[in-house]
Length: 128
Image 1 (cartoon, rainbow, N blue to C red):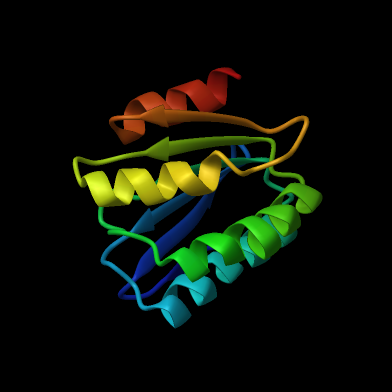
Image 2 (spheres, rainbow, N blue to C red):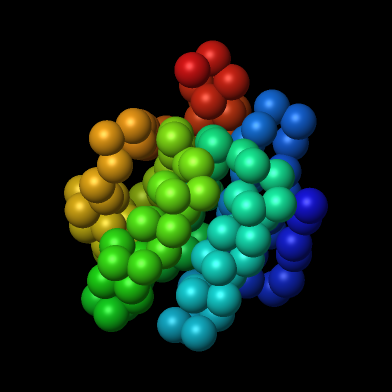
């Protein structure tokens, strides 16, 4: 199951990994829609690993950060996401907003790591 539009590319590989990459800074509506599409992919594939390339995402609005922590992440964890590799870029505002979200994720079995590129992130997910 794959999904692609101007904002995001979502694909699933046979290793149980969802590949998620942002193409541009989305509006709040586009951001939530795209993340909810990701939940649909988790549900359809039973994937438990996620690699998210957020280098083009830009800063995330505070209300969207709250939504991710109170609504999206609890759903993703309930659906079975266990490991997430996040690819950060050089944008300090993007880094700060992503880290703010990730610092508030609560899940006893959830493991998160940050990476500079896709290859290292996918290797870590396959190996763990």
